[in-house]
Image (cartoon, rainbow, N blue to C red; front, side):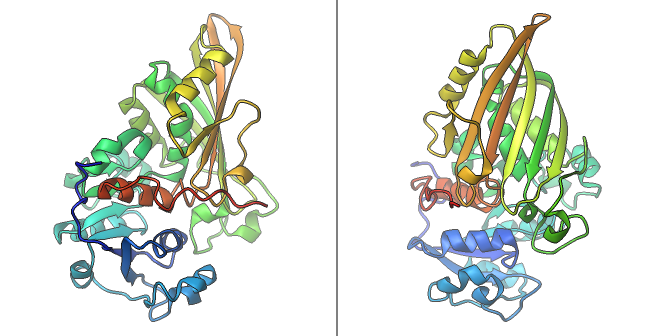
Length: 361
């Protein structure tokens, strides 16, 4: 991609990870450490200070020879001279403040929080239940879903990487939106694994408390709702509302979303599948299924997404369709997608380091 804004950076590109001890930080390190064109220079966090990353994330012990760094608590002013690109995986509101500092210091910023995904201050403050510390910067970050925003990502130094639910649901519904067939109220239920709640256990999210149960939470009020509506409206949806119920599931990784929408009578299953194939047959990470339905085991541990669609019977001149999507919340729904955006920004093959198959079993 010749117009990529970071294409002319010297190689290897220097990368700092802020929030390195979280699950997202661990996944970023796993993805980036083996790459010859990337050099991890600083690992920043508020916990695990002084420890090597393999002593915190045991699965990364094998990378010690590639990343002989210790976790540190350092201010942006101290880190920025050693970083061309900074990934930020911090809680919302904190991330907005830290990201603004790194951007002002000249670093390219890829933010994995929800702080810069929305353009409207009132919507952010309603769904995140806090004031935005830098409302003047809303709308200055490009939404980092490459399947929708490749050209804009390539030209930007500030990326707001999408949420896991938002990625899953937007990818399920995008073929309808781009065809002008998505409008009105869409009903969605999506099950998610415990890793989406982060590395620090909390009541109701700690895995032992959820391993034997299914539990809905934040019904009709999840913070990804406006993000999904904003994204799909940009892609052609009209008068869209979302009735979304997330469900805490007894698994570690993965999201499975089921979306119900009303469409014109002519959109039968054959037409729906044609729309899915037209949208995704040229996307290496998205698999349109014709012979089975998506499931988490087929994508866990990978960047791949499975989607499928089925149309119901005609009723009162309308047809209900159901669209499913499954992905790994930490990879395509999180850190891996942020790396995909970095590749686009660097003007290299977008899928560099990202095409490993899923883990099985």
